[in-house]
Length: 334
Image (cartoon, rainbow, N blue to C red; front, side, top):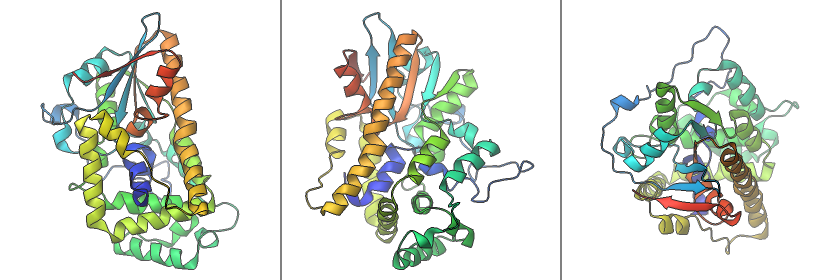
């Protein structure tokens, strides 16, 4: 993993709500407003029947024969991913419930939930973003948002992580990948169309609150990385396409290798910030998700868990944690 694109990696493989931040109004809507997304999400029947993606799927079985599925999603997508392969859809269709990080489809039409979640990212202590980052970084970020036709003075009330999310989200497009074609969204639409129960492993508020609680120093680093991504858009695009192709390939070994981070050239300060980021984004959440999967197994119900792929595959990820706890974990590829 290239550390300079840490936030972009977070967007694609780790947190679904980093993508939603710029899709909802920075002024929370009133109760009489009816939000409508900029792009209509394709329904399952609108999508081509044969797709190119063969992503990783894990079957987890306990000693009673109870089964839970672990599917690593990617939060943006391309039309050629669909339809998903039979081994994924068969497991999904056979499950009683779909569990996702958060129900982004419901969130986008729930004004109360939007207001509550977005409030986590707003300064309420009388300060604004200029009190938390350097003048140089602030001016650079404003310049990028102006170039993207998205700067408004009200954004100054929001923390740097929100700004990072806006910049990264606005850089996405058909040549990289689209949030409305994200795998978790696709499965949510399928579940809702079929009347399948939808469960949340986390929530919108949980993810926004976690981002807002990053230290000022970490948030400044993430914002600087987003600015770097914007200024090096061709390199950024190439790396993101490579990552998406890797997800679609289902190559477990290559995916694990990609996620390895070389921090040897970091300063002590940078390494401390990276450790703060990694603990919050992976160590703590992976353990929580593994506990959720274990509870799903104990319930005896068939639950298809779809969370960011970086939580499922690799060292310290959910599949490995469950295997270490004594469950049978199989990688399904057909």
